[in-house]
Structure formats: C-alpha cells, structure tokens
Amino acid sequence: MIIKSFLLLCLALNVCLAGKAGIIRPCRFYDRKCIADNLKANSRCTPIVRGFVPNQYTIRNVRFEAPFFNASFIDRSLTIRNHDKCRISEFYYNVPTDSLVLSVDCPNLVLESNRTLIQHRSKQEDSCYNYHICGTYPLIRLTAHIRDADKLDLCSSFVFGDVTELPIFAINPLDKKTQNFLSRDLTLLNVFERECIFYRAHFLMCYFINSLYCNFGCN
Ligand SMILES: *[C@@H]1O[C@H](CO)[C@@H](O)[C@H](O)[C@H]1NC(C)=O
Ligand SMILES: *[C@@H]1O[C@H](CO)[C@@H](O)[C@H](O)[C@H]1NC(C)=O
Image 1 (spheres, rainbow, N blue to C red):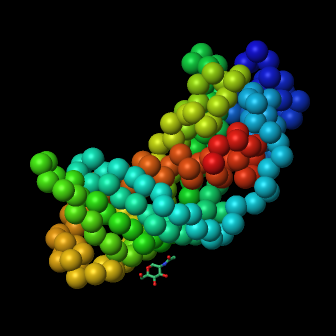
Image 2 (image 1 turned 45 degrees about the vertical axis):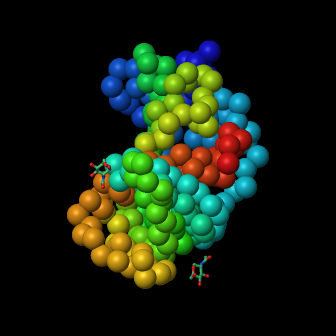
C-alpha cells in the first residue's frame, strides 16, 4: 500500500516536513539514506549501488533528434563532467494523485563532444557536419513525475530537463564544410539546447539515482 510504506518511514524518522494537504516530504533533501530507504520501500529498486558518480566519464555514440532543426545529432564521444555535483532539490509524495516528484539540480554540468550533425531535407540526401563542442551549463534541473507511488519505476518515467540558463560554449568545426555551415547565426541556440537536454535528462537522472540512492536497473 502506497500510503503505509512511505508514511511509516516518515513517522519512524520523525522528519516529515509539513506541507499542503496530501503533500508529504518524508526526507531532508541532503539525507541520502532517508531518500534511498523511501525509494526502496516503494519500488523494486535494489539498495546495492555503486556509491559514487565519477567527476568525469565518457560515453560513446549517443544520438538525439532535434525536430525543430530538421536534424539528428550523434555524440561520437560525449564526456560529462561535474555530474557528481548534482543534488536532490525536490522530493515529495502527492497522496491524492499517487505520485512522487523528484528533482535534481546539476550546477556547472559540462558536456564535451565530438559531434556529427545530420541535416535532413525533403527529397534530398542528408548532409553531415562534424564539430567539437564543449558547453558548460550553469544549472540543469531534472524533474521526474513518477506515478504509482507504491510501485515507483524511474526507468519508464519521463524525465524533464530544464536548461535554466544558456550554456557557455565553444565550438570548433572539424572540417571546412562544417566551418561554413556553422557560420550561421546562433540566435536559435536556446531552442537547440532545450531539445538536446530533453534527450539527455533521462540518462542523467537515472545514472545519478541508480549510482547513489537505489538501483532501478536502467543504463
Ligand atoms: C525545417 O524544415 C522546414 C521545411 O523545409 C523549414 O521551413 C524550416 O525552416 C526548417 N527548420 C530550420 C530550423 O531550419
Ligand atoms: C575528437 O576529435 C578530435 C579531432 O578529430 C580528436 O583529436 C580527438 O581525440 C577526439 N576526441 C575524442 C574524445 O574522441
């Protein structure tokens, strides 16, 4: 039963934070054990976790789609830095809607990549461009609205990635063709960055929670 499991934990630890009717914050956000215990009590995640997130790591060949730009992107080698600096910034159950809201704030996240941009056009072949990009995002805020609060499944939940401020970035084209292409103006950059983080958010959230709190078994 949903209410039983998290309410019990909450009373036992005596740290329930008061809120609106039906909203329960059973844990202080910095209390890793409390949050881990709560996730465990309301899901099938396993408490056997790696115990840390590396300050820097590289993943290969991750693709994302940017429909607004009629483009696809492939990060051939994507290096992520400061993922270990993320912190939980919201954690509450809503009893009437049977949901958990979980947010994680990631300051100064750095994404560095050798990227291939594939530009699609109607009735034409795709064009490919290659460049190196390094972006520092002042604050990325990840939010998962997880339904069925007694059978939480982070892996199948959508994670929203909010780009609260545009990144500071450097782009270096890796060939002449790309150089010409990239000389276009960058006023649409904020649209692009939001689409990009839309695709990254689920991974960033799952890797963080699965490594430090409770392992839901995805990625
Ligand atoms: C995407 O393609 C459509 C149709 O060709 C075009 O009108 C639009 O400007 C393209 N989007 C961008 C951002 O170039
Ligand atoms: C990115 O591409 C550059 C130029 O081709 C290459 O020197 C560099 O090693 C690549 N970086 C990674 C992480 O693969």
